[in-house]
Length: 159
Image (cartoon, rainbow, N blue to C red):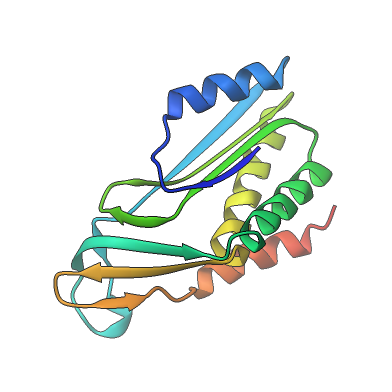
């Protein structure tokens, strides 16, 4: 199940619904991403700056299809009983929840790996554009090399 929304989400409610859908799961892994308080500018020769907000844009229709494809790839690789992906858009403040990924399987290994796979692909391949505002500036967030390294690991481990 996939949602792209402006509204916040309730982790406990999402977990309970996933657990119910998963039936006889032996493991459920939940990841929640948050908007960082500090924007690390060290790679740009500057000191970290406080984040005022993060604005996320997406392309409706394309984004949902991309998330469905990522989810389908995870379900093909691992024996999953249920999944849940929520990604927020719009203006978010520091410490706000931005993403929720949960996977359920009979075994912990599949639940852990599939959740990490989904997050790695969401971070790098999903069509979201992020503009971060600090007290001193605003800038579009660029992809990082470490995110590409995470994707390459999964490509080396094809199902």
